[in-house]
Amino acid sequence: MMIVTAEEIAQYRAQLADYPEALEALDVIEKCEGDLEDAALVVAKRAKIEVVRAPKWLDEYAKQLREVLCRKEFREDLLNNSFNVVVAYLFLNPPTIPLAMITPVLIYVTKRGLNQWCENC
Image (cartoon, rainbow, N blue to C red):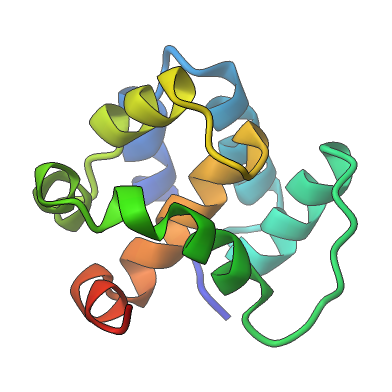
């Protein structure tokens, strides 16, 4: 289970203040007491995404963003838990996953370990 702390949520909220979808996802994470997987399930259901709760189901969504998240120009920001640049890019260039899932997926990947995750491509 991955837990997002109240401090992390506040940090992300400040960075992503211009993105209502991101703020909604952060609200859900907060209501789920920081439990990222439970919150991601709620976000997915609200976005009318059918989720089969299998091990590492968030990883399947993350893989769809791998090409972007592992780019050198975004990696340093993500390693510093700075999401605003990559979120801006993804909102301007919508990925194949629903926009509502971007925030939970970014948190998942950074908590899992971005460098290791990118190297396992």
